[in-house]
Image (cartoon, rainbow, N blue to C red; front, side, top):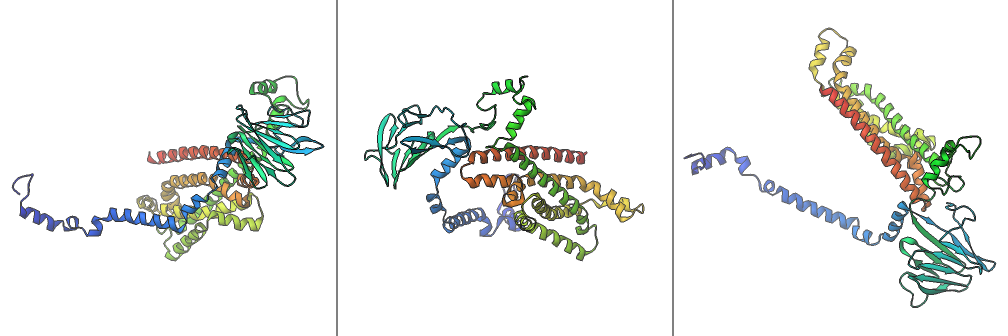
Length: 449
């Protein structure tokens, strides 16, 4: 080499001969990144065609999905306007957003038997009479003729007024819609927020603003002579017949108990068995193999499958949920614990063994102090994860808030209640995630010292 910056032909030849594996890589290694990208694109294309992703998106009910999403943050009043005795009367769904005979500003009955439904401030409204429905779209009237067998929209009707078979749909966007039939009009009037979330119509607190509620709660003049107004407010909130706060919160607590008890039992079960599965603790390969295969069997069956199995055996309730978490986590924790034991520092074990201690004492003072922070940290992580898993297995009958969530979805009209329970679950998962992380960090920090 002539200087420190250039090489002659001999130097280059010697360098190539010395590092041939680096400078003369096979073609597939030189182009590995590009080959990987091409294979990935081809695989994604195959999945797109095999699973019919395109047609699935094209045939998706996006309008229905949008309505469900709106139901998460708004509520619908759904009166049915029926013709009886020559006049239009409103009947309500079981949600009961208004008290009986309440005066409603957007639903006005008239002396001639007709009824007006107001959908917005731009003149959008519906005039319903026993023989005719007039839909005002932006203050422009459109008469909908009601026959004996069908309802007919006008020929020059805008897009908001559409013929749908024998009925007519009048769509006012987010404000709601009306479905005009021969014998009645289905009205859906939408508002932001959750109707009667704090108190239902049977409570003395219903319809009051927050300041009035607080003043009444601490007033000396009691609503119920048997209890204070504060106790009455709590009772009315938990006993809300529409939102069922008391039942939902009890089911949420049941879910948390399922997660805690299942994880605790799995930890107590896996802890001693992990010592049998660890090769450096139990010097018997057949015993190690049998124990590890037992852990594999328990964790290879998904928690949901265990929940279905135990639900069939014990019926719905928290016991199948606890058993499902216990069986799944016992296998997973046993495997993790055994691997941690096989990586301990043997010098501490040898030090305790050198003083003539028994194997039990050796494990107690030479092994457990090393792995205990890891064991507790893993159990805390599984406990945090199980607060989410317990919701899923509850939906198949294992109790808890998951079953309540499934019931609300099944009605296809309680999506605001679904959003409420999802928010509760997210809050709980957030709290337990931070609590678990804090405890694990503290344990790892103590171990570092």
